[in-house]
Amino acid sequence: MNARLTLALLCAAALSGALAQTAPTTPAPTTVPTTPAPTVPAASPATATPATPSAVPVTRPPAANYVIVGNVYYEQGKFDQAYVAFRAAAELDPRSGAALLGLGRSQVKLRLYGPAIETLRQLVQADPQGISGYIALSQAYQQQYGGSGDRAAVSGNLAAALGVLQSAEGVVTAQGGDSRNLNLSKVLNERGNVYRLQGDAARAIDAFKQASTLNPDNSLILFNLGDMYFATGNLPQAISSLQQAVITDPRDPYNRAYYAKLLALSGNVTAAKPEAAQAARLAPTNAYAVGQYGVVSYLAKDATTARAQLTQAVTLDPLRYPEFYYYLGRLSLDGGDLRAARENLTKAAALDSTAPEYAYYLGVSYERSAGLIAPDNLKARENYERALKLNPGYRAAQDALGRLK
Image 1 (cartoon, one colour):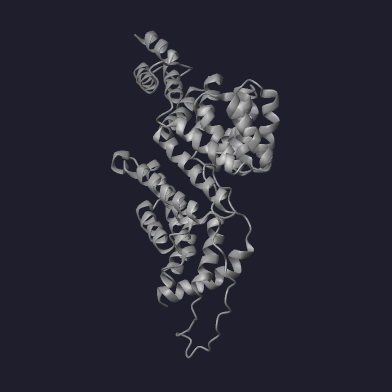
Image 2 (image 1 turned 180 degrees about the horizontal axis):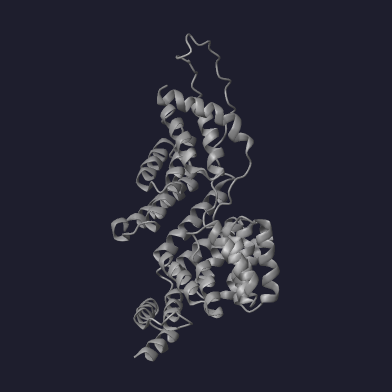
């Protein structure tokens, strides 16, 4: 049986099986969801009587059927299967916007950034009036930049992403109509994401504010705005923005979990803990919500709940959230378990090499001794120096280096 026949049979089976499953994954914050690809009812496959048992003629489903299957798999987080379905759709209909959009997005999820960019360029050429294609292409440039170990090699990506968004804004302006504000808010939100990657906080905040003005009921934009306020040290404004996000979409676990953490960081742990618990109840398999419940519990000095929630979070998603390893390390440091502290803080610092506090507390774990665990002042000094390199004004790291001289 050849590859195309096998794929057709798989698609036919998926149409009856995949559509019966309803467990989509929760999308991570930062990106305003674009309009999903339209689904077309599946055509009834033609029946055929096999000539011989070894030759089974099958009518291959049309491209629209593969798009349906691809959308289902994509929503379930099965990006490799989505990729296969969308690729089949694009082969059948190379100018299908739905197929190219799904294929490009799936390639991004699979970290096939180069092919994703090429696919989405084809989409923009095939459908120059489709805003979703521009947004997805901009995101692909951003993802390739963020996921690169050598950012110098992709240094032009952010400028390219902004150029794509400039083109998108021109299309939205020319189209006008009732969807203008919605589409323009998507463009501005994505522009804010690019400015964030460029380290231009002021322009990022301005872009997110403009997007929120045009689309005030979008909690994702409010999340992004609050996140940028927090990044610039404006905790009251960050709390206000996240509170509005929770009001706008009370069942979103990301909004509520982040809001809870900001409340805890402001010192209001009494209000923070029930919000964090509610976020974890809303999404018990969402690593972010579960982990932030652990962070809030740590800040509230509830070590038992903190350890349970943080451990569950890193089990659910071992690589995405270094912050949770950091707080597990802090818990172990507080309890005198240096072996666990060093292990967790090493993971945190490896997953995020830009956080000075991760390096600092890893240094603390090496400076201390407990039982059979001896201090390692050389590693302690290395991590204190790394923390100071990341933040030259880090007083605790300065004092620590003074102790080791």
